[in-house]
Every structure is written in structure tokens, then in C-alpha cells.
Image (cartoon, rainbow over all chains, first blue to last red; front, side):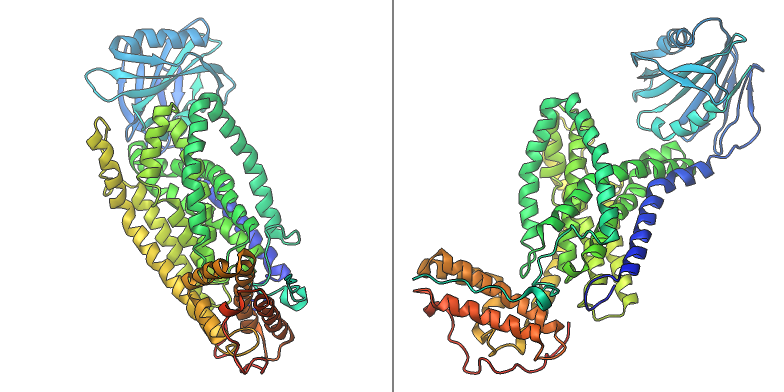
Length: 187
Length: 422
């Protein structure tokens, strides 16, 4: 900038404008780029009943495995992902409904479930549905919020991914969870 | 008796004087203008969609939100506008700063905060992120995006950033625009959007906290930008850049403190009158230190501006453009207002308007003086004569002559060299 005229010389003005534009772009998209780079796979893939395979992202670890139905819980700092595998013949939305009725509802007080199921598709092309819920579970006084993703494969495997966490925490786990679900392999 | 107002001096030569020219945002040859305009237009479309969604969600709450925020924003705009005691900034640039904050910065920040929140979550985990994302990501993202708009304005209209106070005005109005749109979001999406929710939000975010937020943060960044581009900076560019970075970081630090769980005295729930009354006290605990810091800086900027004006005009005293008593009045904004008030009472509104114009042109004379290479500079001489002609016209109005200070006998003599440059 010409300090006396206070008018930027054209080339300098163009350069300065380009620098500001680049800075704006870096701030707006930089977080996604850095966040994406941090979301690398960590550890070996996790098998659920030999039919669903999930690759944990960095920071996620197995918190427990359960039987009847076969279930694996992955966790990271307040965010959780339960992966359930069952034999199932029927639409994914019905599987999601049955999961709510059989797993969430019995343990919940004041359960509220989204009225509409959002269609989703995995990277492999398998379609499914996603619903959200919030409620009080067990003896806890703080509400839990979550989202259930149900997928049914053509070979009759029903996979339910239940991502949950304390209210206000889930939103910070949801990108990781959706990435793991998206990359999941279902027999 | 009819008195014809003297025509302004030829624009050629004077047109480039910072205070003589009325600047504009619409500088079509500047690449910064096109980047600025493109971002505002594109983000404006997104912003309109968002406002339509809020309106559909809660028509009464949305309308009430804007109504209440107008009560806050209009006086705040005027307050910031009149802070610049000697020269008011062009309205198109002020509107541009406001629009950048309201439309561009809010929309871009919504995307950017999401992305950097992802980084915090992936580094620290979801629980850590739920507590610290607002502290670690939002302040730097939002302050950078708001400041970027002020930098674009400074590139396209550097001639309007005369001193740090100008930067504060642009920055504060950018912050005001941001705060208003963010408040609408909070009123509708966080406080529920019902009339009672909106009123609660207004109490918490505007009545209790309205003095502390984005206006201050971006005002500081604007001061920094102006400190770098202002022609009055006497320090080397490197030092000015460091001071600008310090001012920017002071704004970020204020924002970090505001968003952080540190010093959080806000009630977790508002069940009774006592809880509601605690809100402004809690807001003051977080925001008051920065407000005081900014007030001190603004005061210092005023003094710096006054000192600069006095230095620039000292050698003009006794010339055709300025008398000693006129300089005394000119340097004191209150005295300037008082002189116009008294003249209006004695000689009418027209005389007061003419005196206002004379005073404004005498401020422009300071710019002409500071920029002149020689005391015999043609543009400077024209500005002196213009001031003189305004004074002559004023003296010709019945009742006004007594109010205009007697002219120095040395009028017309070439003034000496300036004591110090800009």
C-alpha cells in the first residue's frame, strides 16, 4: 500500500486480496481437512458375530462385548457406539423400530424418538435408515441422546448401530460414528 | 439577505485528501471490492434461507427477535458512529462492515466452527469437546473471519482508515452486525423462539451482555488493521504489525474468556428473580475487564487524534483558513457543538449549518496540510481559500458576524512549514 496516497497499488492490492481470500478459505475448510486427517483407522477391525465388521477410528476402543444379541460397544470420551448383529428379514425401518421397542424402551424413562426415519446409504451401497432419540435411562438423572442406524443386507443380516452419549456430547462424536458406520462391512 | 454558499474547491487535487473525499464502498476497480461483494452476496443467500427457516419455525418469535434487536442495534450503531469526533466515516463503508459481520462472517463461521469443532473432538474426545469447543474453536474462527472483512475494507478503502479510531468504528460495526444475527439464532433456536423465550434471550444476551461481546472483540481487531494501514503510523511496519496482532489477540482472548467455563458465575437454571438478576452480574464479571480496556484504548485514540489535528493545523493559524480561536473550538468537540448551538440561536439554522461546514472543511485543511509537500501547495492554498470563503459567507449572515471570531491580521500570508508530518 502506498502509505502517502493510502491507495493500494493494483498489484499489491490484488496480492493482498488473494491472501485474504486464501485465509478465509483456510479458516472455513481447514477444520474439515485437519479433522479428516485425524480420523485415521486405529487398531484391528472389530467383528460382531462374524457378520459385521467395523474399523474403529483413532481414539475409539472396545468397552465391552455382549451376547444375546451379539453386541460390541466402542467408546471414546463420552461418546459410545453399540454395534448389534442379528439375523433379519424385513425392511430396515422395521429393524430400527424393533430395536427401539426391545432394547431402548424397556430401560428408558421419558423416551422420545424422532417421528421420521432418515434414509442413509453406506459406502458399500447398502441402504438403511437413521432415527434419533433422547431419554432418561436407568438411574441416571441426565438425559442421554442417541441415533440408531439400521441396515439390512440382502443376505439377511440386520445390523444396528446405536450411537449415544450424554446430552450435548453426542454431537462431538457423531462425525466419527458416522464415518465408522459408513465404512462398516456387513455380510 | 440571501447569501450564496461558496462552491467547494475543485475536486482535482483535493479529491484525494483523506478527509476531503467522501469515500465509498463501491470501488469497482478494486479486486478487494469484488471479493468482498461476492462473499457477501453468496453468504447473503444462505443467510436469507436461514432467516426464512427461523420465521417458519416461529413467526412471532422471529419478528419479536428482530424488533427487540433493533432497539439495541440502532442506538449502538449511532454510539459507535459518533465516536469518531473529527470525521464521520462514509455510510456505504459502515454498512459494508455491518453487512460483512451480519451475513458473511456469521455464515462462514457456522461452517468453520463445525469443522474446527471436529478437530477438537478428534484430538480431545467428545466429552472434552463438549466443554471446550466453544472456547478453543469459535473465538479464533469468528474473530479471524470478521477481521478478514475489515482487512478487505482496508485494502479497498485504505484512504478511509486515517487512524486507529476509524478502525475501531469499522470493526465495532462489523461485530454489531455479527452479534445481531447470532442473537436471532440464539433467540429462536436455543431459547425456544416463543415470545417468552425470546424475552429471556434478550435479557441474557442483550440487556445483560450486550456491552461486552462482538462489538468489542472486532473493534480491537479493527484498531489493529487501522494501525497498520493508517498513514499516521510513525513506527516501522514490523512493529505496527506486532501491535495489530496484539490487538487482534486481545479480542480473541476476550472472546475465549467469555466462552470458557472459567469465571462462569451464570446460574445453571433460572427459577426465580434472584437467578435472573445474577445474569448481568455474571456477565459483568466476564466482560467488564475487556470493556474497560477498550474504553481506555478509545480514549487514547481520541487524544492521539486531537494531538494530530492540533499539530497539523498549528502552522495554519493566522492564515486565511483558520484563526487561533477557531482552532481552539475545533479541537474540542463539545465546544464545536456549543458554538453551532449558540449560532443557531442567534442567527438561525442556516448559519449553524454553514458553521458546521466551515469546521468540517477546517478539519479537511488539516489533512491537506499534512499531505502538502510545501506550504505553497496548490491544493492546500485552494482549501485555505475555501475555508475563508465559507467564513466570509457566514459573516454575511445577519447575527452571525458577532459569533465568528475576528480574523487574524496576518490572514493571507503564506503559512510556515508544518511542525510534523502525518
